[in-house]
Image (cartoon, rainbow, N blue to C red; front, side, top):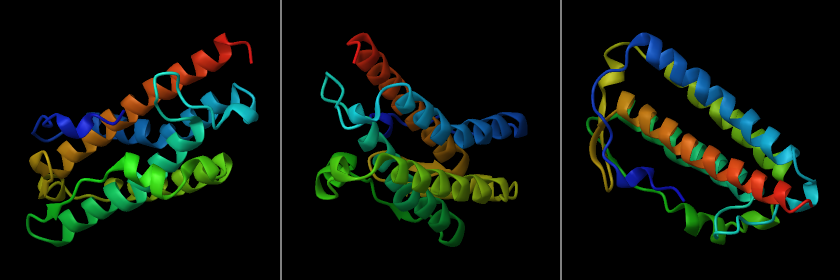
Length: 175
């Protein structure tokens, strides 16, 4: 669960085509999560992964909070400050402190979709020079905005694999 900060990103500037494809993938993530969850009964949205991973509601809350309090804040600071220190976010701690399991899945997905749309709008507006802005991400080191976008895409992929596995587990149980 959430191992993307453990790997150093590949540096460099994304081509405009790769960046546009990345933004399209980022935009699709809330819908992918919602579709996966809606393929099982709503009463199972709080059922955790059999390997101890997040339930659907926990995925939605985590992605919402990481976008709003992590990625949007980091990019804002990278654009407005010179080489800011960007703290890591402990997703497991947030899940426990904010009692994700007691939250409403559909509300969390709507809030995630809003945060993600804000993130994509901000990224779409970047100038070529802004793609190269640098921050220092805790546990990773120096990272450009383009490399951070690559990490966001990796983070999404990790969660997509996790919630698709969860969907499969719940479907296979015939519940």
